[in-house]
Length: 327
Ligand SMILES: Cc1cc2nc3c(=O)[nH]c(=O)nc-3n(C[C@H](O)[C@H](O)[C@H](O)COP(=O)(O)OP(=O)(O)OC[C@H]3O[C@@H](n4cnc5c(N)ncnc54)[C@H](O)[C@@H]3O)c2cc1C
Image (tube, rainbow, N blue to C red; front, top):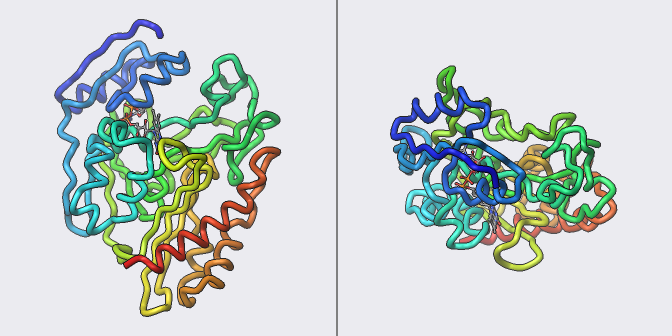
């Protein structure tokens, strides 16, 4: 770990200006991802700007949406009364992540920004275009069991590891950011990037931009929801495949659906064609199976993650069944 400076401003503008003006400066929130990356020499900021004094922790109902501050803790959001009532899918996704201790340190902004768990990214002795552009992708011909089946490139096949992000993309969340050039709103589906030729850039956040909050618009998905995460052990492990499913039902017919997957792409993977297929169909296993087939179109696996081509659709079907049966 290299020596670094540490500052803890109480004004948002000071935090943003410090990171915007210094190429080696980074924000730190809970530190549960960044400190690990620093200890391993994967990220080497020379200045850490601790944002924990900024007033960004509130979870509030506003006109047409719920606003969650970027510093709200993952555990606090998951247990919040308003979130449980309006966005139970988000609560389920958060509770599927990490451990209770980590959820009580990790923030919403940090979770959105967390880096991939690809072993080749984490091992500085191995090639990784994401960590060291131009060095190659070790996973492509290597041990790629955890890796992407959608949207990958010949430069990178890593996946986004967040559970929360899968629920937020399904719920059409919007990320609020503030930067040296002012404020802007980024639809969640446009926040993270596919790897293409520049896998080292994992989001569309610009230098110095601070995530201040996330807005989740009102929607009818307050009951028939399920976040289903399949992993090697039932806690404290990242998803092999996960599915966020939400249904708006009229009796046993589907009025509308929301569907997204995790553990399968460089960004949380929204399944809009499958959602459109489900609208107006009966909530039966046959409909769910057809939706899953549509969802898996275009999937391409590698040597060690062929199992995701079966696990993916089976997880979609089971998540939809669980959502339909939720009381
Ligand atoms: C052992 C272990 C198991 C885990 N398991 C899971 C799991 O199963 N599922 C899951 O989803 N996650 C899991 N996690 C990841 C965990 O959720 C993240 O580490 C956490 O959400 C990061 O939040 P943080 O506040 O600690 O971020 P930090 O570590 O403080 O920051 C992470 C990154 O975000 C940036 N950042 C932070 N806040 C902002 C902001 N407001 N604006 C702009 N940039 C910002 C930082 O500069 C840094 O680049 C696990 C982590 C560990 C260590």
